[in-house]
Image (cartoon, rainbow over all chains, first blue to last red; front, top):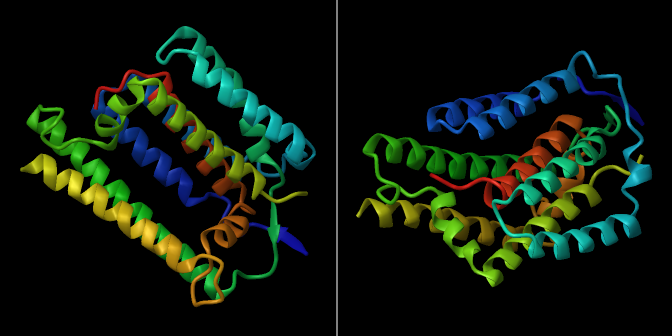
Length: 188
Length: 69
């Protein structure tokens, strides 16, 4: 039982657009480009390209996805950070990832249960609180001109990734989250 | 002072997140678990694209970019 989403432009468009503005404030050209591109993709996915579907489920079967994730764990742990090779790998990852996320534009007709709605609201409040704290630290830190006066999450986490154990831990955790997000996507 | 206040905020929010995750795990309570909720919200293309693009950027940010702030 399916129908089309009643809200073609999701709140993610606003979230990505606001983050793009923050990246402009940070003066981060690369991150600005990424979030502006993301905003455009999200906007098009709910409007002009709304009815364009991709059979994502056919490509997100358990075994190939598992082996790809495992291979990426080894490769990403082995390649040094901030290198052209790492950049090439990330660019190569993006098209298949977007296609897997794109999938089908239809949604289930049944309304979310009250349990789901309550949980969704609770986690949105939590995520927005975390974002506001991080954004505030970023803005105040830039105004004060010191990296460690109001540290961002990046400033705190980045030094931990300089060592091989920290980097491997990050790669494993990051890939497992991505694997989990693809696995819980609808299988149609 | 501001350093520890800021770090305390992150740790406090992280702790709240862990408590909420543990409290709603595998339950029949008033709140769906995190996995139940994700299974539902990932039906929406906008959510799938938003979450996976943000996830990709997170990897990019720490493994490709040089973090300034």
